[in-house]
Image (cartoon, rainbow, N blue to C red; front, side, top):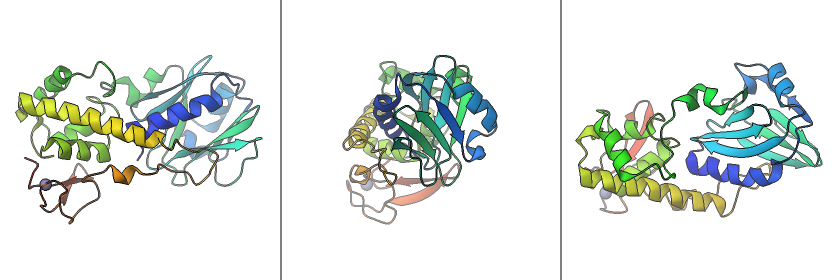
Amino acid sequence: MPELPEVESVARTVRSLVRGKTILRCDVIHAIATKPQGPALLRRKAEGQRVEQVERRGKYLIFRLCAGCLVLHFKLDGQLVWFPNRNVAGHVDIALHFEDGALGFVDRRHFGRVLFHRRAEDVPGIAGMGVEPLSREFTPTVLAARLRKSRRPLKLFLLDQTRIAGLGNIYSSEALWRAGLSPRRRAHRVTHAESQRLHKEIVGVLRRALECCLHPAPDFRNPEWWFQGLEKILRVYGREGKSCRRCGGRVRRIDQGGRSTFWCPGCQH
Ligand SMILES: [Zn+2]
């Protein structure tokens, strides 16, 4: 699932394609992508509006319009594709037509959504969302205070979007490995020094992943595009049974909250 770095790279890249342009037509090809709202609402609200700004909040992509906004959530593997001259082809769920091309929202597995809201803050997932980890507001003190208030295992703490926005399964596993902290440790038991280390590694892994996602940047003109080169920055995720890159111990996979956590019991305490 695209996490903060992936969605941020999409936001920065698609901005240059659509900002300041008017949505001439909105075709809803697969209505499921507008659930629970329905295709008519999306069409009515989007058509004729100019895209004023493109932003990201957590894992959501937001197109701010003159009135209201479109909120896109990619879920497992939704993506954007740009069709020059509006020649839409292949599997597309929703197509936003601009004068010089069409932007397609593509999600073959149909988990992703494109919704209209008056304000992005009205989206339930965004309303109570926590601090942006690449913002100035995310300081070691802020992280320490939030850790103290939670008794959850660290991995589940990091996945909780109401505490820190945009972290998913991959970068939470990676940040914990880099910080040498067990995903099972209770958040409130983390020491001051450990919390400082975790803060540094959360920011570090997200910055590094974002750099990677921007070089090369998403190529929306290629319907097959996906993020390249990310696997080379991953140190623990997806490496079950392999030897740890730090201590040589065996990387394990455990289930936490229905999701896989990869970690090394040898060096994560
Ligand atoms: Zn290890």
